[in-house]
Each structure stands twice: as C-alpha cells, then as structure tokens.
Length: 223
Image (tube, rainbow, N blue to C red):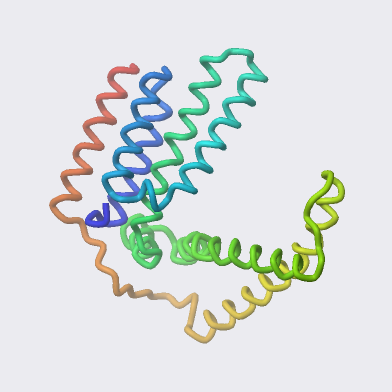
C-alpha cells in the first residue's frame, strides 16, 4: 500500500465506497469486508490499527441495531452494518499509509482542490491524535485533583465539564499559535510548491485499471 501514490489510494477509497453502495446482499458485502481485512493484514495494518478497526466494527454493529429497531428486518440491518463497515475500513488504508503532506499535494495538484480546503482537511486529520492525547492528559490531571468521572449520567456530564473547559482553552491556544505560524509563512499566497512527488507509477496505473474494470462490471451486473 505504501508504494501507491495518494491519488491511487483516493480513487481506491472512492471505488470501494461505490462498490459498497452497489452491492445489495449481505453475502457480497461480507466478502468485500473480508477482502478489506485481508488487505489490511497483508499491509501490516490490521494489528497496528486494531483499535480503529474495533471502533468501526462497533459503530457498524450499532448502526445495524438502530436499523433493526427502525425497520424490524434483520437482513436490512445486517446489510446496513456491513455497508458502513466496508465504506469506512478502506479509509484506514488511505490515512495509515499516506503522509498528510503527500495527501495535500495530491489533492491540490491532481484533484484540483483549492489549497485552503485541502489544508483544512489534512490539518483536521493531523490534530485528531493530538486532541485525543490532550483529552487523556487533562482527565489524568483532573483525576489527580480528586475529580471522579463515575456515577450516573447527569453526574458524569457535570464532571466532564471540568475536562472540556481546559481542553477547549488548550485547543484555542493551539489554533492561535497555528494561525500566527501560517501567517508568518505566507499562507494564502497565489502559488504553492510541494516537495513530495505524487506522480503516477506503473503499479498505480495497474491498480486504477483494476478499479475501473471492477466498477464497470458491478454497474453492468446491477443494471
């Protein structure tokens, strides 16, 4: 996966999402999910990203339960859960094997997305791990001061207010520092250059060809 350029991974993500929408039976969707898990395993990401896989699986199960409670159809619930899982697992391949600066370069130079929007997207991805780490640090600091996050729902919500307030203040301070840094570096200029090389290679053309063939075949079968 790391040998593929970001554009190929973006197209693969879109293609798998389209496949998940086109497939209507749970057997085909389950096969697609298994293929994605095999790809993650071969790429060495299944173990490294096991928490993300577990979180996405839990969300898919939750979505399936909501669908079952709403429709009462177990087959429809399974299809909804598997479709959501298939559409989200592929993002692990994209985000875990692609440097954010390479992703920004591909979005701007190849997908023709304005630099400001591409930067906002990748900046949000970049700060998610930092935000989670800071939330854990704040919780531990408040726990050392005697704050308890246990109890009923109302009590826990009141306790979490003591965590959210310093977390928001730290986030605002980080955003101000980032804004100043971007301004000093000339953010918003008319031209942009990238050090990353994101040109397509032979393997990328091969993967894109397979994606196109499979997508056309699925459209033909569904039609």
